[in-house]
Length: 375
Image (cartoon, rainbow, N blue to C red; front, side, top):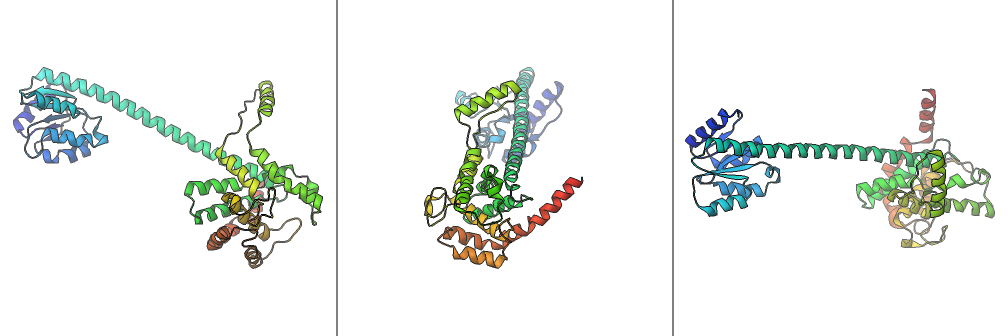
């Protein structure tokens, strides 16, 4: 791109460069339009006069300093002025080179060629960096999907112990995400809560069938065993202890299996929920008898989501209650079992909760499982 208020200079410079094989030119004799045209055309090099009416070459260089997308474009100054201060100002403002008028043709073509070599290298690096960024983004998305699939599988593995569809954990997670959203949590964290809440009962993996599948009322001893599923869930998701890590690594060396200790914010959140989703607002819950705001908010949210779905669902020890009865029970425990603010947020989003319950119902999940097995 050649910017000069004198048409003769533009024609001479263009002829010199054309003689050396350059073909694609943008010429401009009105510098007031220069910045917008540079923005539109994205030239590989700009040849710029200094002394022009209305907008000088130095003015354009100053404007360029505030436009990051132009920083990589070489600006070569062509000027008739002999003032050394002007040259210093131009170079200080980011000019790539400075040529005095009248321009020598060989000098001009060498300077342009050198500037274009630098520009080409910059473009190659920029494109490479962009490709690397794209690949990293794709890989990150793949890892994120894999992580979510692992969480779903682990959650369902526990839920299948006493629910043949595993839909309960999906519903509880989605209820928790909706309530968290109503409470003002950001979108990313709501999604994390939705995933982590699905692991709230992962500790059921360690509960004996005689207790977990007991269709009758649990006695005190059996209930004490059932309570341990909170601690078991935490143990499942916590990082390996140093001794355990060494044992597994020794096995890995023998079998050729590589294992790293768990260090995941998501699993830390899931462990927190597993530990606290049976705590009650009035302090009568388990395993630690936490009370009020000493119970992490994520545990309070999952408590509401879990109890509602348990009331609405059939279990070995109970039939599903009608929705109206479930809501009545929930309200009766406002301020005792449930944090009032969390419960109120749940009721504000009841339409969304019910849509989730109907969409992810156990019958639908059974049909999907049968269809999957048939294929």
